[in-house]
Image 1 (tube, rainbow, N blue to C red):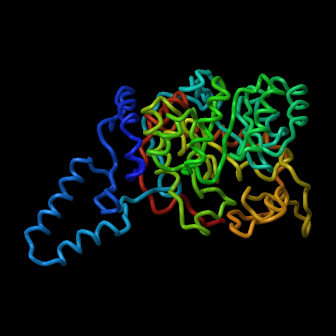
Image 2 (spheres, one colour):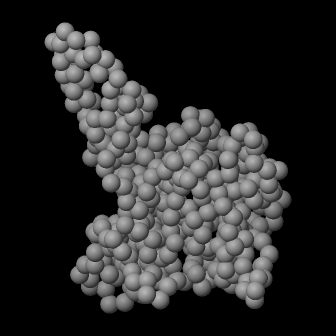
Length: 421
């Protein structure tokens, strides 16, 4: 369901065969842009070729050289996918008949067996984002009590990891070690995994998961750690989800620019509305028996539920967990009100903190905000889980696993009344 171009088409035969064996609906199809000819969101290669030959034939039958010029000119035109893409704010769940009597009957636990690592995971599949303000050991200690997951940020030292594993051994099965894609990042990741043998999850996190270098990096990590479960991203289209899974990743992070403190879409013009990205990427991943994380774009428990309803296996939260005691940073007091800093990992704040500032060749793609101080994260966790259970009762899903099958989204122009906001 995602958008694929000629570059992806060159690597797809093996994937199409594997998807067909896995029961994917589009195992014998490929989304084909035909060099930017603007042939529609998804057509077969044969259909694209037929249209091309029709244009060539028309040009040959004409004595005018302008016909040939129009064929050549068309091949250079940018492609526009006219399909409307949706975000969480654009839809609501349609309620359905339910036999559930209480929210307490809803089971939010999921059990997954991952395609490449062959590991099995059981827990509530909500993840604290690997930002240095939210992906903390303190956050993991609280979230793990509810069987929620934490992607620990990459700036902790090996010694920090050893101390955490020694003092909180019960948490290790619910955390991942995060890493970038540089050689230094890989060396540190290897040292952490050697120091904490019980740690079985890796989160490979880059802003642009479409880089060939990143694909090779995922392959290298898979070769070094064949039994570890690898999360990798970020991407937003089906063909790249498939490539990363076939390269060795188990769970693909989906989302470019939806985060509350991310400015990638503003600075670069690149992105994809999160609801549509999740729907399309989930279809691609599940066809290969892979999994996805919806990363970013959630501002309330209803958005978390929509991500699961759209097909996400895991949902990652950053802004919704910001401002708590378990987040890094001091409490700031202004005019009698308390705040904590929250910032994107590509912001000026983060880059000054870790690499001395923003390099001349790049722009900051994150913002820094003061979030109202919110106390213990325990209260927010209960609110999110309560909202998710309530969603399930409205659509008749006794288990979180059933939510996507019970989901019908309706497009809306307004989510709620703003009378008292």
